[in-house]
Length: 113
Image 1 (cartoon, rainbow, N blue to C red):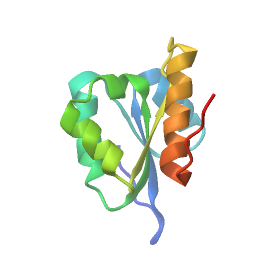
Image 2: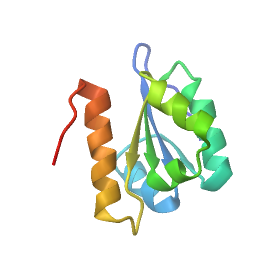
Image 3: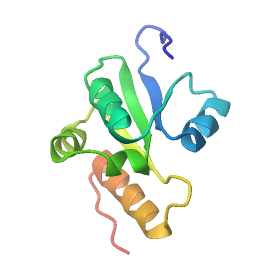
Image 4: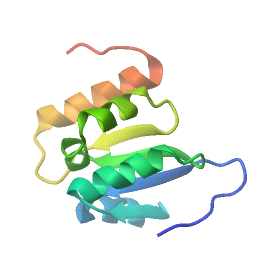
């Protein structure tokens, strides 16, 4: 699925299993990919190279399928920024780590709990 954004507007793209993409599609995100495993990791690698993407929202299952090279690329990327959201059945501790990392990357503050 692919659409074009207005000039000067960066896209938000959602990547993950069906439960993740469905919710964001209902919220109006127009570019999404229901993929898991190696296919999701390959798509994330591709999305990181695109100039028209500003935010990638990925399910935490995508994070688990990334190799160390892709993990380093995600951590080093300032545009697009990659946000991992909890997948269905994810434990709360994993969710908290994802939110802490997002805040640290976005504003440079490390939250301690």
